[in-house]
Length: 388
Length: 250
Picture (cartoon, rainbow over the protein chains, first blue to last red):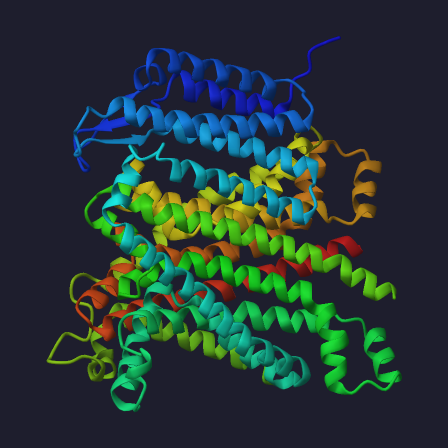
């Protein structure tokens, strides 16, 4: 029997080999903004632990390299991710001199390459296994739960990003709340306004081109400019409309950010509603009319359920986009994770940037997986109702 | 008869944009009402024309890189020896799109420092996705009859790729490039938060000094550029699609 190699496995094994042998695993810095010293795996960990990690990585690389069952590869990916998660925490404790609160230890390029390699392997195995939508959400929940356990256990407390966090834990959760409120609130508002607009466009053809073109034009205005432009009209409203200031409408802050996100969200919602409704088969509508359904019954009983996957795709685009764009709100005082990103950029403190960027990426990623699962769960229903 | 109206509007937009960039002073009275206390209404910390050209250069470099890499990758995963990577590359594209541009930009700074480089990397990475996705769609949805005919006429793999597959997929590829360029034009402004020289400088200067006129002119220049470039690409696509349609019929 000849040994067979997996093509992607060769790439991943090479990446692992490079990360382990040639790239630094953790960086030690005397304080948060000076350049640091990079440490390889053997320097960054106590002697036994370093050898153990090298051994584990060699095992993982071997499993990846050969044509092994997909289930085993997924286990190797999960094991690899868990191992680097545990060992980077150990490196932080090992490298930090006792009772030194200025020193910072952060993951270095080797760690990030390993993270990327194992994530790639996990993505590949999951793609090959084609799990059901619910299983995918479950996998996401397990991964997030695992990360939460590691965070709570205090294993990562020595890492620089958590040192940045521990100094501003209250602010972090406040900004997290603002970020989610901005992203979800503007999504909710855009669905509330966008769905009726989409239905209107579907029914009244002459409106369609004009409205969609206007919404398209809004998308071409760069986000930081749109946020800024809205400061003026909202400031005017706050001063001149009684009661507006009382409900939180102000020239700077969350209000212009909310309106900007809302405006960006309208196009995907309206356009996908129009496309979804246009895709409803004519026979379905005629059959509904034939059995004497009113327009309203037809809309809620036939058209909406059939158009749902396309509308949900629009909502997915909006949610992922809003979670990303909400970081920009910080530039106009709107809060959100962007506060840490821009503060970090201003102080050239990259750990602080990471404290803002990492949760944003995780949030967007989780939202995408959950909504993708929702879309897929809606699609077969569509087939069934079509057959019925 | 009304077909020429959009062309006229576009030409007018181009004329106004060029006039504004060459001599922004003419537009001073229009923007003056937006500023308070005799603050300057026209950006005065550098030439708008230079910033616009630098902005376009950044986008052009990043997009060229993205085109080369994305199209090459899409060709590789649609060949028999790369087919193993096709499902993975699809899910990677999906995941990649969930990365917010600000996060990409911010995360590139520790590695590359401040200035144009992190912006280029963020634009490059963000530009890859639409081009890759569209090239893939274009190459995987070719009419089977055409492919069969190409094979039957004894074309080699390479000939098929360059003479049949790529020309037929070209309108789709161009649509991906168009999307990518429009996204990059807007995203490049964020690059100015890490000190890249783009039109974002004008907007950020406006945000910092509470000068709506700056924000508006920075935003509108980028918006106008995006609309004009979008239209230009659409026109090229229509011409190519017409050609591809004709060549398949003959």
